[in-house]
Image (cartoon, rainbow, N blue to C red):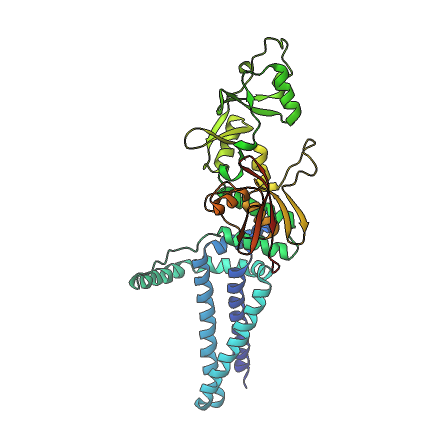
Length: 418
C-alpha cells in the first residue's frame, strides 16, 4: 500500500468521524431540553443562547446537517470504491461498499446518536458553534434546497410552513408530575401548579360562599347591634341589605366603625361602601383582575334574576391556589369532613363534591349541584328527612342531620373494595 493509499485511508476515517459529528449534532440539538438551555442562557452561557437561536431555525439547521452528512457519506463511498479498485480490483467493490455501509450505520449513526440522546445538552453546547458556522456558509445552498423541498410539498398538497404546536397544558402537567416523581418538585408545589391551571377554568359559582352561609347586616340596625354581629362572627367586612337579603346595598368595614363619634345618631348608610357585583358564571381569573382595579376585597354574587346568590372574597380565590388559609379567628377543628373509621366519614352537606372527591378518592358527580347535600336531593328527588339514604356506585350516603329544609351533615360509607 502506497503512501497515497494511506492518506486516502486516513481521509476515510475522518469522513466517518464527520458523519458521526453530524449525526450526533442532529440528535443533540433536536432533543436538548429547551428549558435547560434557556436557563443556562439566562445565566450567561453564550453557547446555550446560540443553541436556542439555531434550534429556532430548525429547517435551516436540519438542511445544513443533512447536506454535510450526505456529502461526507457520499465522499466516503466514492473513496472506498476508488481504494478497492486500486488495491484489489473490481471483484471486491460490492463487499467493500457493504462493509462501509455497516461502518457508517454503526459508527456514523447508531453510536453517535445514542450518545447524543443520553447527553443532549452537553453535546449540543459542544457542537453548536460549528453547526451555526456551517448554516451561515451554506445559506445560499440551503435556501435553494428548502425552496425545492417546499415545491415538492406543494405538489403533494402539504404545507411545509406548518410549525409544531406550542406546549399544551397537559404536557406541562405531565412535566410537573414527572418532576414530582423524581423529587425535584415538592408535593405542595405540584398541587399549587395544578391549581393555577384549574383556576383559569373556575367560575364564581364553584367557589363562592352560598347565600345560606352568609351573615348579613340590616341597614336599620343600631351601632351596638352592628358591633355585636361583628364580635360574634369575627369578620372584618359584611354585606348590608335593605328590606331583604335579595337587595345588598353595600359593604361595611369594621375599621370604619372605630371612627364613629356620635353612636346615637349612627346610620349605616353613612359608612357603607359600594360593593362590586358579579354573576355566578363569570371566570374567577377575570373577576380577580376587576377586583384589583377597583381595590375590592369582597364581591356580591347575583343570579340571573339579580337576586343575591352568594359572595366571594379575595381570600376564597387565593385558597383555590394555595389551599386553606387559616387566621387567628378560625376554629381549629372546623373541618367539613371527619373520618369515623375505615371508609366511614361524617361530612357537611355544603361540602363541594369536587373537594370530597379530591380528599377521599371518590368519583361522585352531579349535573345540577356542587355540594354533597345537593347530590342527595337530586337523587332522592325531594327534600330528605333524617336517616334517608342513597347509594351511588356502591357508596352509601345517609342523611344524619337536617336544618329545616337544608342537609347539615351526611354519613358516607365506602364499599369494602375501595
